[in-house]
Image (cartoon, rainbow over all chains, first blue to last red; front, side, top):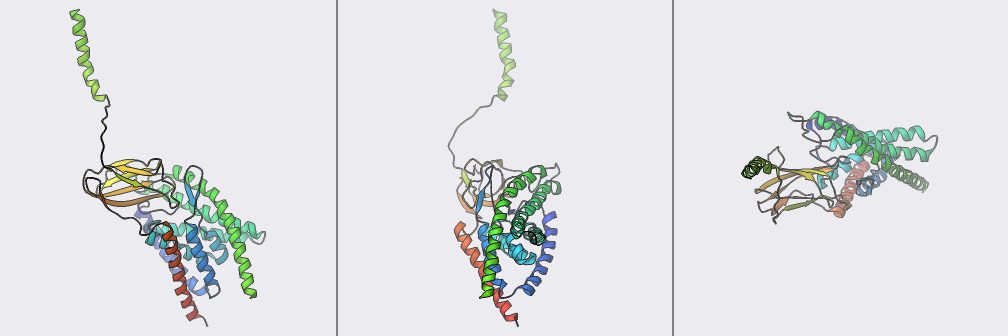
Length: 216
Length: 143
């Protein structure tokens, strides 16, 4: 789901860079204010784990593959801004050092997966944890993967409308919503189950370790 | 009999333009540039659409789909840079440039600097290093 360069028109990625820059500036202030010596090693470990998880591709029906992101776990455990900044760091390293995901598409990847995904995951987790923590973590993981897939499918499918030549041929991503929505939503609805299970396991582990080190 | 012969000759003359639509083929060996596209788990980018452009041109030089092994083969007609764009319906893909001469000898391709496992270790190292610097900052500012 890391969109490479050449897929998104400047009419979309330039405004997205403006929005993302504002959120990155605000996020940096929030992280600097909220982070302390106890939470920082946790966030560092989970960010590194999120980076490593993105290399684990799971095969899906239809011959394609997808990967979990860990954004739901980051958001449920450390809040939206920490998750957004950590995910943005991962996407930036992938794009700038390794060519996974584009530089022009970095704001779309960061806003869809890092911000919207984290916001939905954190919101759902806070709303549901009073009823059942495990279910809240599971749904946080699922929505943290599924909502970004929806946003990216919409952004990709809009490209033929946004940027085309005189005869109507797309200049960037060539497929419309009729193709992108099922192509992205069906696999990610299934993969979200794996992301949800991972969030339950990871969230439980973090909570146990936190309690243990608090008592030490 | 003579009339029949003239009739046959006339029909053959009329049939001549139809040969323009008779598709022929010729087989020859040639050097091709072969580009293999695959995911980080080495799964091939199979049966996905691609476009190849000469440097600076908007009309594709070649379009098609990758084969079952995720490969693209093309025969450059000149030396220079070639832009290869491969896109799947779910948003995976690549857009990169390679340089070749007219004999399909590849001179350079703008591929990522690290391979798969190297990437994971380098990336984790960069992340932990950045957080290390951040912890120094947090420690300095803590009361």
